[in-house]
Length: 239
Length: 324
Image 1 (tube, rainbow over the protein chains, first blue to last red):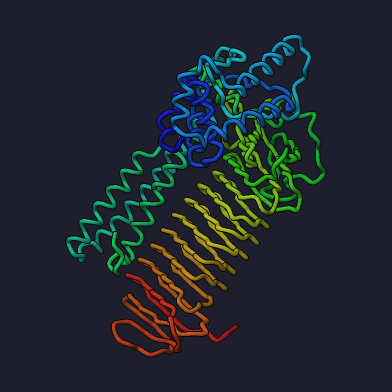
Image 2 (image 1 turned 135 degrees about the horizontal axis):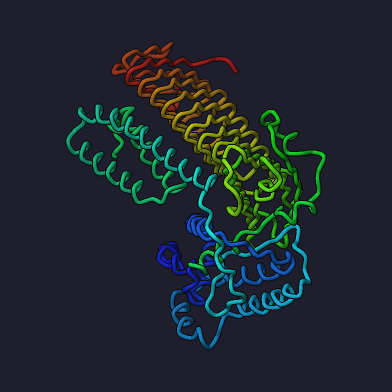
């Protein structure tokens, strides 16, 4: 599984719509790819804010054991071929993932014990990466809590993202004005190449999700425009 | 949607929730003592310390995202992590909603995320604060992100990727590649050995004793001051601020120092030849041989270091320094 595969399947994965093998492979890729993990985090965080469910807090030793088994299996799955994945999807009803089954059994025991009030809330709870799999629903999540009317600090952070976006845009516009002055003296071919590159970088900004990815896109555009504005692009540097 | 939300919530492990707070040890050495930030404000505080021992593999990477305050990452000799957190809130109920979450991966990486439990009465962003000090193995790679708080990285050996919006960035005694990004937070690098790539929009950059293969630093509205610099490839750029550069240059190096509206002042120590090309309305070059067209030659020897100095509206100054 590669980054493009993850991009295509991430939403389905977070919705719990992927089968065990595909979900395991995706999780395995997330464990070894920081970019995809970041994208998954952002989507998950957004959903997290909307859903407002109380997190389950299982005992740390329980989750540690699950984590280790799942993690090893997922990393192994991430390195498998697409043929293996396709074959596994065909057989998903016959051979559910051993690791997921183990997780289901362990979780079921914990839920049962918890129902008897056996375990106090631990000081440190360690939970695994998102693992929604149709083949192993260990426990139904509680129904969504009432969504608060005022999102206060979270809303402020969202507003702040827009403010940051505006600040980046202002800097880029300022630099574009300076670069355009330089551009007037360039050869037509160089000017055209510059226009194409700027358009591509702007499109990257527009397409990037708010937050870190968009900041990265803005930074790429600003760095390029700055080289144009200082006059370096005409010094033998092709846009 | 329910499954997605449940998965997202389940992904978060919590250190210090309402029930956990009492169980955690209160350490005499609080985060505020380690990194004094601001005068005490009204409200309630809680300082916690958590020690994380690696399960099997040593901790190879640490990613921390703290939008609610400062973050300091320190290298230490131990194999595990020490997380010191200091929380502040207007009352006990809100304090209990502040979370520091830990998400370990079997590959040896660990993620730490701060959050506020959305269940509860509205609270203003300015009223809640979480400061973190993370002690990590020297060899762990760091990915640190804050919003308006300070971000500090000291005594680490595997480089880092650092992001802030308005918070300052300070990197000291670090080796390995360092990437730093801030919108409006000043950045300071001291004793950094490795590639440095620093970018800001409205902030000053200070570089003191930076050595490595590449040094790339740029700011749109701010100045860059560098001294005791020695990298094989250097690119420093500003739009409005001045740039000063004091460093050594090696044979075959390429140095570009450019500003749109600011002035550029470069002083180099070089054992070999340097060829300087200048592009500015006003050029002040001391010594060397003028070759015409704004090009100057210094010293002799093979593979001259190429220095390009630019300012569209400012002054460009260059001198070869004899000082050690």
